[in-house]
Amino acid sequence: MSQHDFNIANQGFPAFRSDLNNALAALATVSAGSSAPTTTFAYQLWYDSTADILKMRNADDDAWITLFTFDQATDSVQVSGEELVDDGSPQLGGDLDLNSNDITGTGNINITGTAIANTDTDTTNTGNVTLDFSANQNFVLTLTGNVTLDNPTTEQVGQSGFIVFIQDATGGRTVSLGTDYETAGAAGLTLSSAASTTDIVPYVVAASGRILLGAPQLAFA
Image (tube, rainbow, N blue to C red; front, side, top):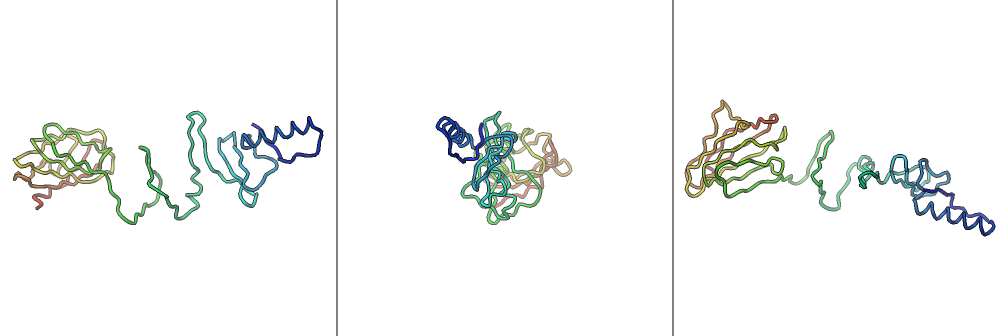
């Protein structure tokens, strides 16, 4: 790591070579150091080795702009969020891939358009079925036999959506519930029995292990 004022003074050859090598080393290491370079230039890069942050000098040469924060232990990098804070309407140039991470914070999310959660459409359901709430918000299940919804482990408090039950061409399929699924008055689910009928059951996750089911809306046609 090296820093330099990038001013090669008139001097003898050995000193000139040493001075030039120091300037080139500063360029190669983006002026890395625990403190900012003494001599600065507009748009100059500096790697703050104490905080592991790459910064750029602004156009007026009177402040540093944070560009990236590095984690040298995991060999990873994060783009500075400062521009998102200062920009009242940041825009993406393409799709945002969360890579299995969450967006967290306070405030509101306003969407112009449509927010679509994943829906699991499963055309063959019989026996014991466990819904994956971490991968899907909604479920469309065709019943090809009697089904028991086993207790899941992937629900998140506050999550809500719907479960659609479709009777197959035979009909008469029933749905039993694991203990994590609760209905009003502990009445369970009574669904349409006619062949090919469609029922909708809303749900909300009130707590871990408590999935509250609303009254079934029956026999859509």
